[in-house]
Length: 394
Ligand code: GLY
Image 1: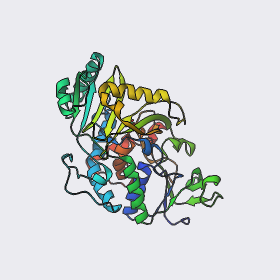
Image 2: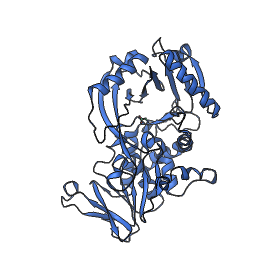
Image 3: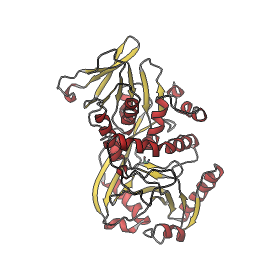
Image 4: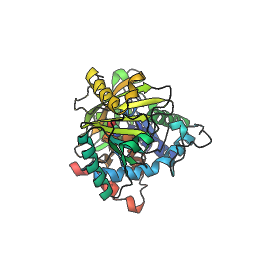
């Protein structure tokens, strides 16, 4: 355990955000320790990994769009550096799917073929048209397509799909590969990863000075503590168990289907009479179908009803999904905040920093989060940090 006064940052949380923060800090020469009972097995394990700020935009979330666009710009270099640091061999030659500015980081299944947002019913088409007008007003690069044009891009789409919207700059990555790579990179840099649950923050006077470990889960079975001169709280939905932070769990159920041939060549999102679903193809032939959005507290049960809704809507858009083998079903907890923006930066309590509340965008926002915490935002982006300032809720 690092000794007190060793200028260690203790990162609580081993998801994409916590591990990314730990990795970037370690890269910049700062001693860090990660604390998580099961790194990479929380919300990041369930996440689809869409890097899709444009196609995920909603009428009320323009600030989130700005964060997402800024973070997406960082993903190519982030992924390439991560792959190198983790000792992954990039596949050569670059694949046909690498988008402009994107290294083809096959090892992380990073692809940039855009997102096709499609409409099933007349009501869905009308709603998509309104969204398209909003996106055009914001100057976003989107293309309106007829049903036939959608099927030309994605021949497995149902004949009943009425129209769509292509966001060509959107990308995606496999979060399970990303967390595995982050753990390898940390191991190669000698960063300790304590596989235990942080049960409470330790304090020296007013200052947070580490975390206590929950006894049954600590490595030696006796509990113990990890001390440092700063704690970075990156525990996602579990953050509110450690600090007064307005983060709540938002359950998402997701399934992975195994396909002998890729059914889709890009991410497809869709609305089926107002009910949303997305399908994300993986390089290994898997197709991720997600995700429910449920306010159920800390419940992570996979339910028949949740899977039924996902499959019902996915089948309307891509009938071939019913032929595929079910590889995996899982539920994760997104860390939701009252305004759907993350909390990144000093908490107001000395020694405690937040990197939490990323809700639907943890994977997308990980590179930007690390840049904010390392003070690495160029001038024109510096106001983005204010959007995420934890003080906005105090
Ligand atoms: N970003 C997709 C989701 O949260 O379901």
